[in-house]
Picture 1 (cartoon, chains in turn purple, yellow):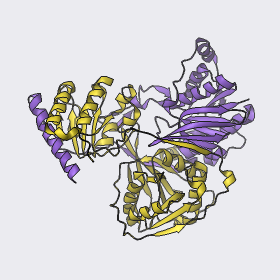
Picture 2 (cartoon, rainbow over the protein chains, first blue to last red):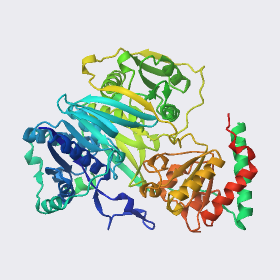
Picture 3 (cartoon, rainbow over the protein chains, first blue to last red):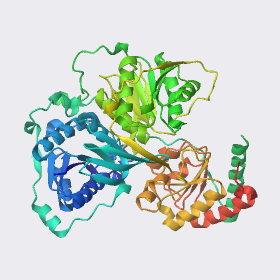
Picture 4 (cartoon, rainbow over the protein chains, first blue to last red):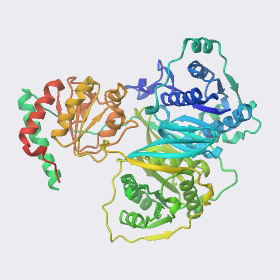
Length: 274
Length: 356
């Protein structure tokens, strides 16, 4: 059976985070927790493949106990199982430590439900913005790595391969890769479905599987959490905008815009003359 | 325990005592596709020249590809002292597995203390694989780089939706790695007379191990290219919708520029992500930047404040964007922009003639 795993993360909706102008610190209160939007595109991609070929979709997340809500959201959409990888020892992980725990979890999921042919991740998370966890997992599992995928052209479970379109700065690349493969997805790939009513009802009572460090036989504790993270944040600050002597253009619109147009055109002429 | 909580800086330790002192020099992995080099590679060589001088260490480049010797020579012209060139037919297209294997081979042989990549789709794809293999720390999407007296790389990057900047260190491992956002640093002027050495590296690959195949590359036509634009007319929430962006496009046309947008406008679906300036969008440094209906949140400002001339149009006199603008107009953009289009066309009657 075609087994697919989607790695998701519950993140603060960072678009809602504000800076306290007096203390220059983050105001975290009242910031809603959401499923990282790109991860929902990953869930949708897996569900579409399942709709077409059958199979099984497992959703994994590493996070605090409250992240079970994120898993329930995915189960409501149609995922078969949600696994919460949660333990204080996992906290404080950078991308290297995170990819280690997720890779170990995918291996465990593989032992339980069959080796995943495809692992999906969002292209990056809203709160980390690194895009490094997907490649880290692919590397650890020795999966083929297809990042920044904007479309899955075809899946062939019999031959065990996918053809995808990867988004690049100057174009699009069509790539074929054999299973097992890790795909990181862009928002352009699809529109995540809304949960059906039966899905919502099922999710309401659904209890995600929880794995703590004790549930792994082969976990190297030196590679998890803060202890397993080679990078450290040494300081954070609020960037100062550069100082500019602003000239406010005041007066009648026609006058203001002709004066501005003169400035702009002169500036352009020096550019093109250079 | 309380002590450990207060000083959480004890991260991953090497499994055995490693003598990292043999690791010296700054290495830039050059990105190219179809003979075109990503500009960020040359920008990285420019900034790395400064870091290497400060470390009194060599500046090196890695070029991987097929028939890529000319690119290796260009790397010298942009400042590299030594270029490691791995040239083989199976390396013609970028693919994670072979490229990361070649990079690992070179890094393990040459032992640089810092390795930098462009924070492009390809650079992030490659760096993530290499850092995991080594293993070492990798900081994504940096906008500032420096080194301290202990030869530590101070890799600073926007955090929390670019509302803050964080400096990230990797103390226990070498090389220290980072991807760097395009458009932030300046390349050195190209000088074909600059001297350097090209060192050919045998491909360590077993061809059987390459299982992914690039079937086709379709070059995008008319894709927005904010990074190279000399004029950007950008809109935010105040633009009100797609129709407002059509108006900005007319002004951009009159000035021979491109249309940019704040994240707010992109999130509202008024314009595609390719147009986004700042915050996981593009960092730009055009000659002229016109911000219309943009409030000037930090995350936008960090993406455009290096523009040479900034004009703000916003009816809110307290909008932060006015504070970083050279010329500010406190008025309704739907009054100002149409008048400005006419005024530019009048002042620049040749605007419609393409500049050769």
